[in-house]
Image (cartoon, rainbow, N blue to C red):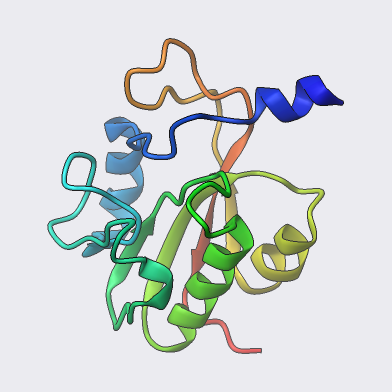
Length: 148
């Protein structure tokens, strides 16, 4: 089991989304806010940094791109991002999240499948200056203000 947990860990949490991956999905949505970015890796002119903590910010009626940090080293877990994204969609934002396809987790079933649209990504995209593509499956989860 230890090998699996190490395989999915990363020292860095600021891997930039591959531009071609972003461009493909942006052509459908025309994002106006990158909710987890830095000045060096933002995909939109408006963005929230780790210091600004997007989870406590109002996302308004933006069309939000979110490639959240996948680890818990930033203080926010992926289920925190998931809940914030869904809540923001109920308040008027459209949110597209790029996340690991962890289909065996409670949050994937209880939030992604229940309230979002899920689209799986083919292949192993290479993030930033990584030598290899990500070893885990990825998907987009799209929240468009689904009501409970």
